[in-house]
Length: 254
Image (tube, rainbow, N blue to C red; front, side):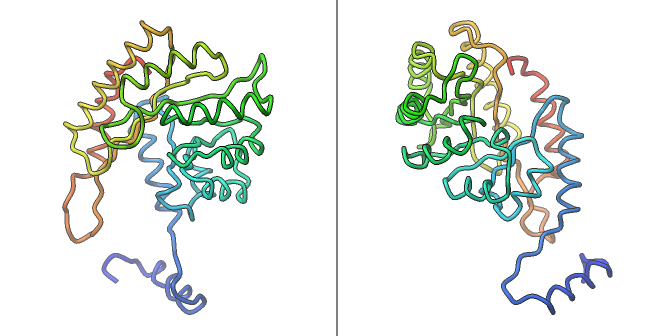
């Protein structure tokens, strides 16, 4: 009662009396306001990507509010198919890439969308499918993001990533459109600044050493959030967004 006005209370009472438990109730209006605040705070030209693993129930709603959806499993992609999501707005991410799952996804998308490569094996899988299905033409190549590891088991270290770039450029089947990086959640501003500085150095290297220009950076900042309203345990999210905006403004490679 403390955090709910009378109209919302009436709505919830109606839901409780109409639906069995457990039930999930989402306030799309509040979600829309938060997405709008993110857009209005971040610099112009920044696109928003919703990671479906955060909540697959919100896929259809977030497809209307963000520029892309990130799927991390074959099951998440099937949810996108059921919701008639345009394949062009889907980023096929995650480590769970098998020949069978990628054949299914790419047969549906016809090669549209963006695909992350998080290991040399991923490149081999996608390359073989591209060759075997004739998806690659003179005017169309697979668009990929290379995932740089933050030191954990996900993504590739710097040397592996650079080695793979050489193979990709030699084979001429895919277009490297950028770098994918996610360093965890609940991070401090200092940690985000360090990550962005590292990514800027990598961008300079890729531009000058490998002739890769106009690269995108798909970056998961991992902003902290309060799980409990009564406990002010993290910094104000709007202030964190402002700090992130200031950091991004100093990166001119993406």
